[in-house]
Image (tube, rainbow, N blue to C red; front, side, top):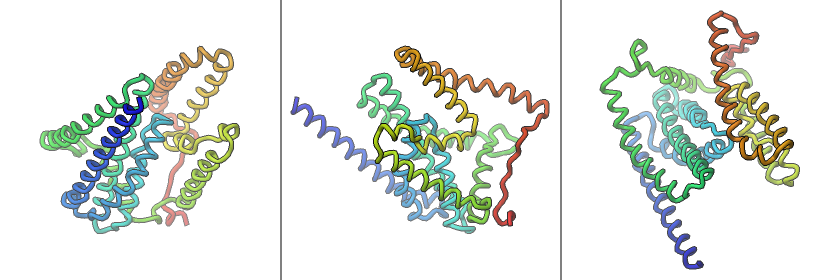
Length: 303
C-alpha cells in the first residue's frame, strides 16, 4: 500500500509538472504571437495578462463552485477598462479588446473545468478520468474553435447590423473600450470610491470569516456570493432568499427527505423562474413602465 501511494504521488507530480511546462510553453508562444496579430497590445502587456491570469482564474473558479455562475465576462471587462486606459487613445481600443479576450478565455475555461469537476464529484466519477477528458477537450477546442471562427468569418458577413449575424456584443464591448480610454472621468460620480470601499470590505469580511471560530463564522456571508445579485440583478437574490427559507424549514421538518430531494426542488425553482419572462413580455407589450428608472452619467457631467 505504501509503494502504491508513492507511485501514485510521483505519477501525479509528474502530470502536474508536465501540465505546468505545457502551460508555460503555451503562454510563451502567445506572448510572442499575440502582438503580431494585435500590434497595439505589446508583448509586456500580454505577459502581464498571463501573470494576472492565475489569480483571476482561481477567483472565478471559486465563485463558480459557490454560485454556479461564470463571472468571466466581468473579469474581462475589468481587463478591458484597465488595458485600454494604460495604452491610451493610440490603439487603446484594440489593446483593451485583445486583453479582454485573453483574460476572459482563461477565466471562462477554468470555471467550466470547475463545474465539470464538481459534477464529477457529485456523480462519483474518477478524478483522473475527468482530468484526462478535460485535457482532450481543451486540445480539441484549440483546433476546432479557430476553424469554426474561420468558417463563419469567410462564409457569413459577421457584424453587419442588417445581416444574420449582427454580433451585438461586439458593439457593446467596443463602446466600453472607448469609455476606458477616457479614464476615470468617464465613470459616474464617486464610482471609483465605492469600488475601492467594497473591494477592501470584501477582503476584510473574508479574512474575518477565516480567523473567527466556526460557530460564529457560519453566520457571516461569503462576499463573492453577496456580489452575485449585484451582477445579475435583484431577482436572483430574492429567488435565493426564498429558496434558502424553504430549505431551512424543510430541514427542520424532515432532514433526511430534504437532503434527498432539495437539490431537485431547488433546480426546479431556479429554472421555473424563467416563467417570469412571459408576464414581463406582456408588460412590455402593454407599454407599462417600471416605477423606478436609473441612469448613469460621467462624473464630469455630474458636477
